[in-house]
Image (tube, rainbow, N blue to C red; front, side, top):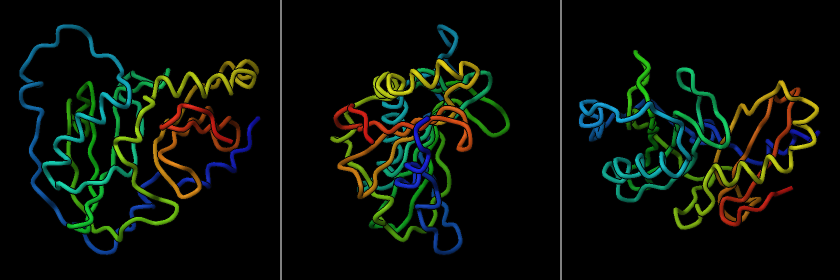
Length: 210
């Protein structure tokens, strides 16, 4: 079993975003109206990170032209679990140096009332202290390896452990950046911190990291 201590190398959560005071709201442009009106041609299916990321990037850029991608996380929604590096819901955080704020955006392939809407949803903007050594932004040009390809690499490293624990599935897929690594890094977790397997994969090269 790989040590889960590696998880401390990256801070892929909202703790890294350093809110300093009360929330500041903004009025995002919603891209959901047309998608909600149109009848789906086929049942919704989980999508890769890049598919969701670029859908969220457009309204995030409209909010602030100098946005910096900070984190990207897969989430289960409805009966869709995280599997094969794909998910039915993705959550991203973007920071704006000019506004000194960060905001959360989500993209879901299904609606799950009352909290989850289909398509892109923008959360409120919060004060942001800026980048830290453990929580850096990444460039879109560095985001070369999609989540499904990174998953194949990670699962190759986890194959022996997964064979011994067939009942434990993939529970976490995250993308972020830290000073320890050159560029954005995927993190994959099977099981839990106490009983699981953790693997990092470079989102730039697609290679596993120790």
